[in-house]
Length: 505
Image (cartoon, rainbow, N blue to C red; front, side, top):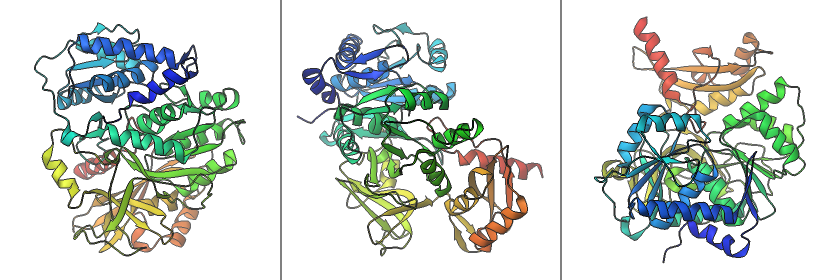
């Protein structure tokens, strides 16, 4: 029988039931404690007549009850569909409809946002305190397992460049990635991971929760990120591994700068990692200086149940490479128009395949057919290049590439040039259509309020590092970049702002 993710817990219930697994500010849960929550929720799901192939939507922020519900769904064969509770009411309704959910759960104790959503639905309390659920929808249609490959969960894509889609996460794929992720960072029972990345995202689900569960590592779990709490946990709670999107580390750096912290206490920290977004070299350099150790990086996506490339734990790189191909994954760079594989060093679209590849998008055969290619390849829409040593460099999104005077402009290059200049904390670059069909390069930057950049010196810096066609036509200061609940920059919102300006002109 196919391995299922709840069996990670089953192992520790037999081998070390009393070992602490989840640490919270007010309590600690052992594997046995988590097991009791899973037992209760499994019984509740069966009493609600949730069947194999039904979708269970979970409007959540991180908490043990959310983790238990994910594992209980695995036991009954239901497909957990996580939605970040900080989504707008219309977004949550849209996801519930898209998932054709049989029942919707809310983590209403740990999350005010989830509790507010629950009030709109008219819920009943779960048998597990901290959860509430809607009535069962009798008309929700159960789905068969795709090609005999059991589904563990549906992850909704962030929709940063279009309409969100429901990615089917196979039990096989996400379990394989959990093991590989743990092995890549030598995760074990003596480790404690700071777990704030939302479990509604593949980063939090696979890299943090399931990788830790597979390896027997503990979690210092938080429902949201607060820099002061993280610094306290690093200093006093034995945190050995810290992972998060680049926006986490940008916020942490800003907090340390504002409070004059040049070297935070982190006596047990041995592994730093960032993913779920492009890595800026200036950010990497600052984080490594702050902690005195390497900031690792990787290339991941929901459609592959996690990472395909990771930097090696024993290798310190001075660039922003996403590292090397992991076990079970394949990657190639192709011409985006013909699909022809390109020679080493040339830029093109990234295609991937392997153990973790999704069976498809939920009830969306057109989107599935548009993304999957002959030979089992998935066309990611990302642009990258492979170096001779096998290291991957991701340079941007195909849809975000700007065409200026007939030349390709990769936003990440411009963002790196801006981010390396003193006084600029974050940058996002988008294209703006012009009357002649050309595109202007427009940069939005978050400045250091205490030490804003010298604009004349900035222009000189850009002339030194960027060809004329790559230089921004405008640099717009902004208080903060719009990001979604998973920490990804929402460039569509920046482009909408520009379009609104054009409409008013």
